[in-house]
Amino acid sequence: MEFLDNLVLPQSAEHIQLLHYMLMLILFLFIPFISIVFGGTVLSYLYKRKFNKEGKKEYLLFAKDTIKILPVNSLVGLILGVMSLLAVLLIMVQLLHKSAFPTVNDLALSFFLVSFGLISLYTYRITFALKLVFDSVKKDTASGEGNSDFDTYYQSTSKLSGTAVKFAILFLLLGMWIFTGALTTVIYFDAWKPSSFFTTIFSLRVLLNFVLWICVAFSFTGITLLFLFLFWKKDELNISEEYKNFVTSVSSKMSLFFSLPIPLLLLMSVGLLPDSHLSGTMFAYLILSIILLFLSLNFLYLVNYKKQSKYAPYLFFTFLFAVLFLIIKDQVTINNATKYHSVILSTEYEKILAELKGEGKGEIINAAELYQVRCGACHKFDQKLVGPAHFDVLPKYIGKEAQLVAFIRNPVKVDPAYPPMPNPGLKPAEAEAVAKYLLEEYQRLKQ
Image (cartoon, rainbow, N blue to C red):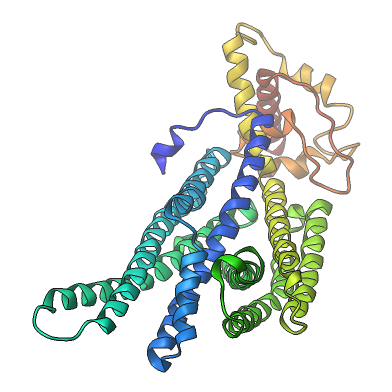
């Protein structure tokens, strides 16, 4: 989205790191919220249909309570859903500036789909409540003349309720599928650039992460229902023992069924990552998350099979922190994947700042001499010294002078066979002159 790209401000390395932290905090709010909203909507729809087929009252009551409790009110939905996703979009515009990556466009599409999905969800929530009121009135009112208006309103409400929930599920499902695809492309930044939108969303990487999110969504929905019915809102709901057992059974089975594949999906997802995107920190958060997942399964066993509802809060918060650690794990991976691009952005910022300060204006830079003084002790064109030979590494920078400048200004470890390159401490203009000299000299020597 070009108009958003035009709003981007130059960012220093510190500001870019701050944006990563902000993105992580926003996802802490968005992912758990949208997960239980989607899972709760699907659950409400399914049990409403089961009630229509079988007529069991606990099905209708469960469908009503699920859609009433889980999505909370529309204002909170606006903040945690729409505004959070908009913030993710704006942060990604900053972090991926000048990358020509499809992530921003995909996030924009996801934003509109999720927004429509939430609107449809709250429409379903209101019309479902109205339909229940109409049902109770219809039972108490004798049929006869003068009921045509009531019947019209009843049929319209029923139709709108059924249409709204289907649109809510469809829009939320598509929106989160595209959202998952957008984040996956960032996780694989520089290692994978899909050729088209459909190549992205139907790729193994995206489908794997999307199935992982669906498992998390339904697991977290069931666990949240246990927490609310057995602990947080048990006095407010004032439910019967029979209905409580029904809710516990349904929620526990759903949570167990969708929790079991999560560790395997996580390991498969990590197995697809390139080595350059891996780090000890990422594996640490992955291991912590898997440990918490197994711990939450133990609490789930105590709640469902041992009937010890006092463990419902432990179950909820253990699973919540497992999800949060997964979010941190992904953010660490994104940081690893985009660190090279972040260096380019911060170098551009430093260049603009130097120009504003008037540094380097009118200064004559002898690039060859500067290279010999700052770089010659460790590098040569045709042989390895402390660092690799230029003939081995410069080909990847042909036509990418900005990336070479960024690396010279803020070097990162690339080849494990060599020690990390120290920062030569060059000004932006000096780094540009040295990069230009290296590429020109490489072309000349290769002829």
